[in-house]
Length: 253
Image 1 (cartoon, helix red, strand yellow):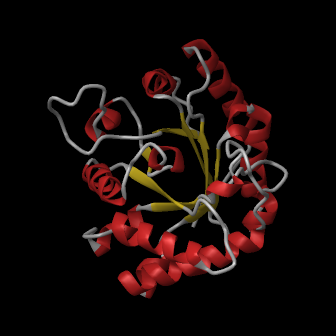
Image 2 (image 1 turned 90 degrees about the vertical axis):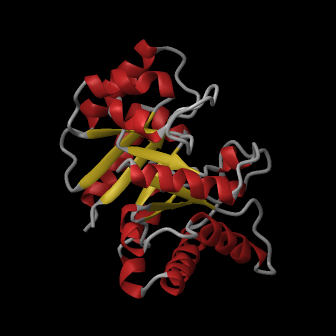
C-alpha cells in the first residue's frame, strides 16, 4: 500500500500565479520520490490550471464538494464538475467545514456523490478536545458511523480516512501537540470500527492518514508508527517543507 501525502492549501495562495509557482516548486522537489502518492488540494479557482501543468508526480484534489449533481444551488460545486476539470481527490468533512455546521448526514451525502463520480474521497474525522474519560472515542465512532452509513462494502476500499485531532491543528487557538501514540491509538480504534461495520479484510484495505499539523519535523514519527500517509495544512504552503514530507514517506519501508 503506497503512502499518501496530501496538501490542503485552504484559502491560499491569493493568485493563480502564486499557485502555479508553488505547485511547480513542489513538483521539482519531489522528482526522486517513489512509491508515494502526492496530492495537492488548492482552492477551487486554481484546480483546472494546476492540472494543465501536467505534473505526473502530483495529483490534484479539491477541498470540498456539494452532494447534488446540478441545479439551483448558488455557489456550490458538484463532484462531476471537479472530475471534469481534472480533480481526482476530494477532502470531505474537514473540521473547518464541520465548524461551519456541516453534519455527518451532509458528509454522507457528499461521500456518496464523490464515489459515484469515481473520485477518491478523503474523509476527515476527529475530536475537538481530548479528555481522560474517553468521550473522544465516542465522537469519532459517531462520525464514522454517520458518514459511512449505507456506503456499499465494496466501496470502502476507495475511501481514505484522515484522523484530524482538532485540538492539535495549528489554526486552533489553544492547540496542544499530539503524539504518535495518540494517532496509533486512534488508528487501531478506527480499524476496529470499520471491522465491526464491514469486515476485517475491508478494514485493512483502508488507508488511514494523520492530519494534525503534520510537517517535516514530525512526519517520520507518525509514519513509523503506522500512518498510511499524512494530511498537511500549513506545511503544504512551503514547497521544501511539503516535499520533505513526501521524501520521508518515500524512504519508509
